[in-house]
Image: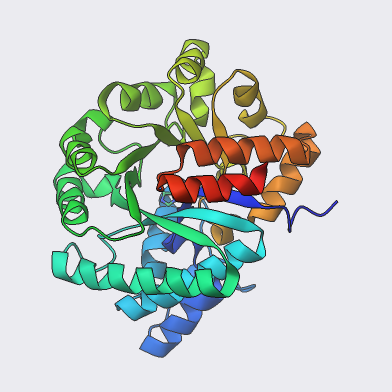
Length: 326
Ligand code: ADE
Ligand code: ZN
């Protein structure tokens, strides 16, 4: 059985985190920037813990300077996704990295992203949507600004607002205003929680932010009452098992709670987060899930239907993609 060609959805993928290292080296060479310190001799990204991962991630994207650099990145990323069977993907974009928080600059980047996604759709058939993302460790004021520029630059594929970054910095409550702006603009809402921090972080996010989905959320497993709440309130967890195992959130695939959470009735889907950083692909994650818990094609189709139920796209797109998982 090869899982590569099986159709897949992915709702949790950071554009910069999905950058193939060879793509970043190519752009660095074009700009005459020496970035060799962020790569191992074998060409892979060099980091040893979550804090260093975030630093290397920001260093890698510092060479991307123009809307066209980012368009090329998006096309490179969508090509890899499509090659791994992904038919629908939601990609986190960060206005902080694209134009430094300037509204007019962000509009130019968005126009380039739309062209990149059009090109990828024409070439590979992949359907992409965008989630604008604030960076938690940049603080609540920047997050409000990011939400404002997102709300003021509508774009056909921009469907959501989220938050990534250092989970140990600030609390969910600190970001209430930013998320209110995004929700008011009609964007779908998700936030990272319960990845680096435990169940309290997930609970706080549910209590204070208008989320229908949580990025990761897997450490909710530490509190059975919270797991019940996630099932009852039907909150989708965007689970990234290969990412979690690589970062060390769980020590092995066997100890990862994806299958347990699903059995407890929590809506779950599968994504890769920052695949080249973690030496994974959607295909390798499907292989590991099938090997660890015996998931069949029916289980994956069921999970993909769940993902599409929570996708932030329009109803016509949802129905068209869902038809691929019947
Ligand atoms: N940004 C990119 N990848 C991330 C992750 N795994 N957790 C939090 N923020 C991120
Ligand atoms: Zn993430």
